[in-house]
Length: 266
Image 1 (cartoon, rainbow, N blue to C red):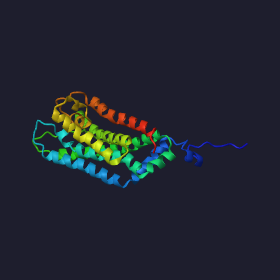
Image 2 (image 1 turned 135 degrees about the vertical axis):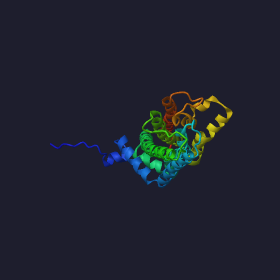
Image 3 (image 1 turned 120 degrees about the vertical axis):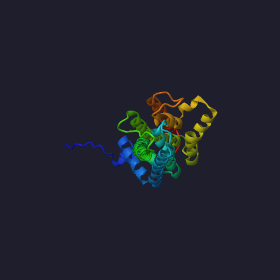
C-alpha cells in the first residue's frame, strides 16, 4: 500500500494557490525583501548614527548638575525615529508603487498574514537597531559629560536602564506607526508626509497651544517620559503606561490598514 508523507513545505500547487502559506513562510519572504531593499541599510545606518551623534553632542553640552543627563543623551531619538518612520512607510508603499505588492498577494492571498509578517520583520529590525543605537548614544554621551555633571549608571540605576531600553523600544514602535500609515494610504509621498507631520509637526503645534492633549502624542511621551529619569510636569503617569499609549498607535493603525488591505483592489 502506498502512503503519502505529509510535509511542512508547500507543494507546487499549494504555492500557486497560497493555501498552505503560514506566517513562517510569509516572514521568510518579507525578510528576504527587507534585506534586498537598497535604501534600508543606508537609511537605518544614517538614522542610528545620527541618534548617537546627537546624544554625544547633548552630553558634551550638558552643564546643569541638577538636570536629567540621561534624557539629554537620549535626545537623538528625534533623528532615529525619522529613519524608522520613513522606512516603515516605504516597506508598504515601495511595494505598492512598484507593483510588487500584487505579486506578493498572488503568492500569499491572505493579506492580513502579509501585513503581520511585515510588522514582525520590520518591528524586530527596528527594535534591534534602535536598542543598539540608544545604548551607544547613552554610553558615548555619558562619557562626554562634564566632571560637575552626575554620570548616570546603566547597571547601577534601574530607572536609567528603563529609560534607555524604553527609548529603543520607542524607535521600533515609531517604525510600526509608519508601517501602519503606509498600509492605510499606500501612496509614498502622502504617507510619509502624514507620518512625519504627525510625529514632528503636530506635537509642536499642540505644545505651542498649551494643550494637555500633548501627553498622548508619541514624540512628546518619548522625550518627557520614556527617556526621562526625573519627573516632567504634565507627564506624571507611569512610563509603562505611557509606553502602552504609544504602542496603541501602531496597533490601531495596523488593524485599520489590515482591514483596508483585505478590501482594496491591488
